[in-house]
Length: 100
Image (cartoon, rainbow, N blue to C red; front, side, top):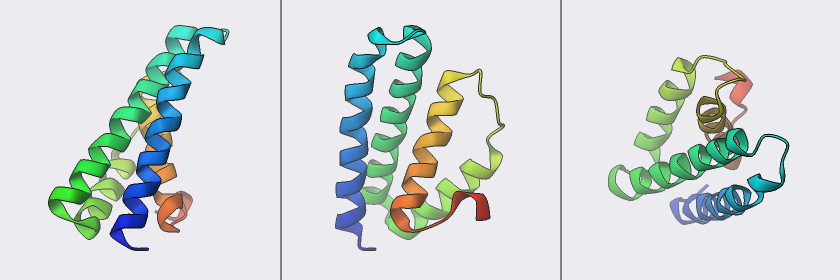
């Protein structure tokens, strides 16, 4: 996948996360889901900036290492959001997160 396609995909993910921030007030646990969406939005922006500055290959390497280092805590909205954002990034690239 080329750099421009990945950037476009991340931009789309970022917009969805922004919508989720707004919609979080309609959930059973608005604070949790707002933090989750904010974490995803932040990670998508960070990945976008990294691709622009360091290139796609370097960003992929960094993202894989970061993903491997994350602990699995479903109760932490920010950690869960970051993990979900990285998984979406990998799927966008055609990578299976469970194989990393």
